[in-house]
Length: 388
Image (tube, rainbow, N blue to C red; front, side, top):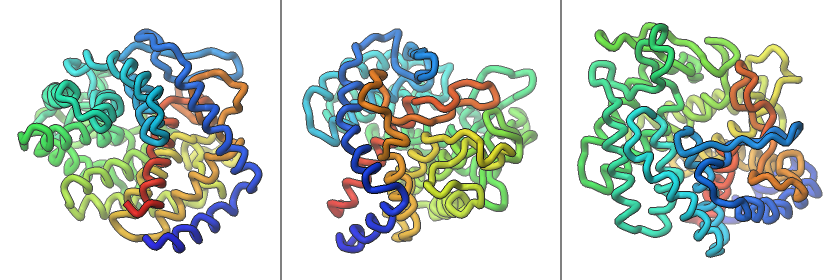
């Protein structure tokens, strides 16, 4: 894109927070990066979130679905800065994830492995990382049911949810698409496409918004329940679910060039961008149907996921509304309203994410995946500025 046009759009979008807020927020980023770098590698304390009110840090082993994001954050900072210290630490944290390549119990092996090992392979191109990614894909496809046409999500609550598939699961398909490119075996991409098509058929409402969970009959393959597990209500607009949908179908279009995927990403993106309950700074409430709005909790993670997806979606469509909205989000996130202060020692960057409101879990807290997609959005923004 013409750099003058891009600069003009930046000026327009920067009008939302004050200039001093934005300048101070960007200064804080380097300090926040150092906090991530300084956190001692420990396979039992992979950062997930922190309750700032009680100073309760939450870390887990590699079994947790979010376990790959922290290594990914370090790889992304390395990509942004070129500082070898981040590469060295990223490799240490990535090592903790490698055994997860054989875990058949988790549909989130895609999140785990692509964010950690996937970024490692992008940076290093070593055959060891490549082999881990291919094996991870072999493991993931074992959760595919050809009758349903989807990869199973959770294994719990099976008496109620016979065969649940969540919109989040679109994100795990990237592992399968990559495995086909790395191995030459079309099986992985074929399964990813079948899953994407099934989700396209059953997960979306006429207005473009997405359900969180669709439960299938595993014998007949038909959808029998459309519900939520983390949203305000079954028919509500859970913000992170919409962000997963936008990102997932934009990514699927990247690999397949199937216009149906692009159309869905565009429709869901426009639905979110034009929603009457979106705050003026572009950072969504955790659910846009929450009756507590405007006093509902925000979700910086949803905003970061959307911003990253919208940069890529702009590249495929040349629709400037996507670029402008991504810039609005990133301008807001790079202020002192959202970036943690330098005095906070926790290994996180952004405040104000919401994990699971119905369970009152991780409410208004720094959460590791918000940082991951924020950093990815910074990388995509940087690439756009350079015309790549």
